[in-house]
Length: 353
Image (cartoon, rainbow, N blue to C red; front, side, top):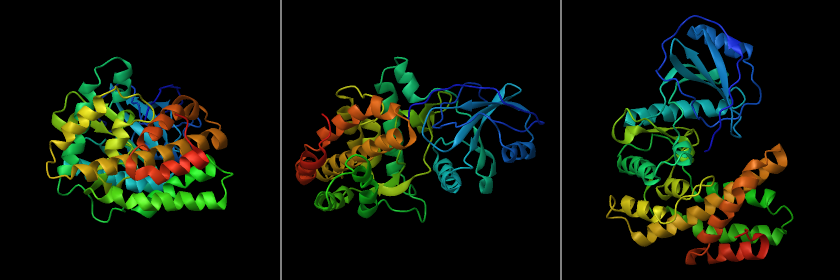
């Protein structure tokens, strides 16, 4: 997800603590509602031994808040999820799992899960999204991003024990948000037809293998770590909503980005690169799953952007990105297996092309 940095300077003083190196602004997914550190946060930092300036990082719709702390030429990220405590344990669990698998998730340097507070390794400011905006050749970033997915989907222990499944009924639950926010006046018959059309196709999305599904895998949540090698050059962020689910979901998330235009022809090239590593995959099942999950994700994202605009007064997502997402949805609906879903959109909630 795209980010912006608007540092402010609330003070907190305390003595030193081990930190990871790094001194650049970190483009973490976040939304900062205020610039102050609470007493609980100060007590947490006190126990960790910090004496630092806290710079709030802003930019997203999350209830979590992030601050950069600097000390003696080093820096860490403070994650304050006190208003989203339920997300902390899944984040910690997935962070530790990804590190165990050999991927680059931020090291957790201190924690108080009960209060929703973590100190994290600072990955710097080089998100793939920012590098693309700065003119770096897209293929040089999408290639390592795709290599991470290949390595993840090839790993026999990719799915941690007990991880929840992103099954068809959960998928349907997620996209019913569209009915509530994008077509709130739709009739009971229209709602029923929506459910019927999606229930017809969602099981087909699961005809490909399942793996760890990171859920928000895109250029805004990937960071370039050039001092590392192989797949570890891609730093991973925002994975607390992970599921066990179809391998195609994160491919859609990456190659049909809601917030950034992907150059024409690059998704096809990256897909060919991915499929070359999985010669046993049924290509028809793969393409069908890809189309269904593209339609699913874009439907859900349109609803989220609408909710952010109407309910929370955050209009940029809808104004800047919903037209792109609607075009992507329109394209996905061309797949033959989605004919009934397309009919529903034509009849009740046709996305703008």
